Length: 70
Length: 130
Image 1 (tube, chains in turn brown, orange):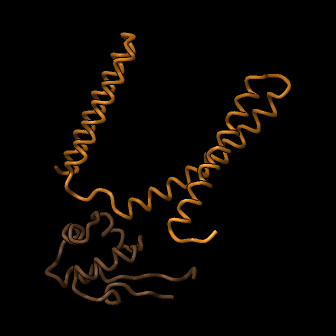
Image 2 (cartoon, rainbow over the protein chains, first blue to last red):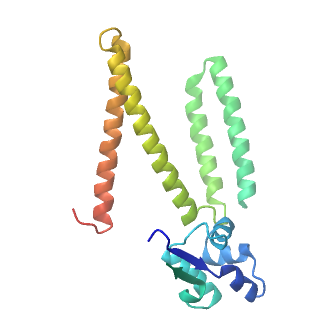
Image 3 (cartoon, rainbow over the protein chains, first blue to last red):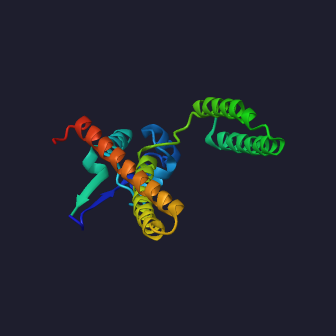
C-alpha cells in the first residue's frame, strides 16, 4: 500500500486537445490552476469526483487519464 | 471581479482597519470600533461574493485540513505540557501560575471534548458505525 501510486496523463491529454491551457482545464472542471499544476506534477491525488470531471473534460474514460500502480 | 482585484481591495480594507484601530485606541474611543468592524466585514463579504473565479477547491480544503490537524496537535501537546509545568511550579508558591496552568489544561480538555463530539457527529453523518 505504501508504494502505491496514481499516475496521470493530464499534460499529454491537454496537448492532444489543441494545447488546452491549465487555466482552461481548471475552469472546465471547477478547480484552481494550482490544482492542475499539482496534479500534473503528481503532488496531489484528486477526489473521485474531480477525476471524473477531468476525464469528462477530455472526453475519455477515467482509466485513460489515471493509472493505478502498485 | 478577479481574485487579484479582490486581494487588492482586501489589502485596502485591512489598511483602513489598521488606521481606524490606531485612531480608536489613541483617542480612547474603542466602542466606535464595533460598527466599523461590522461595516468592513460586510464590505469584505460583499466583495468576496463578487469573485467569479474558483478560489477554493478540494486541494485547498485538503491543505486546510492538514494544516488544522497539525496546528491542533501542536497546540494540544504544547498547552498540556505548559499547563502541567505551571501547575507543578505554582502549586505551593504561586496561585497565579497554578490557576493559569489549570485554565490552560482545562482548555485543552474542552478542545478534546469538542473534537470528540464533532467526530461522533461526522461519523454518524458519513455513515460510520459506533
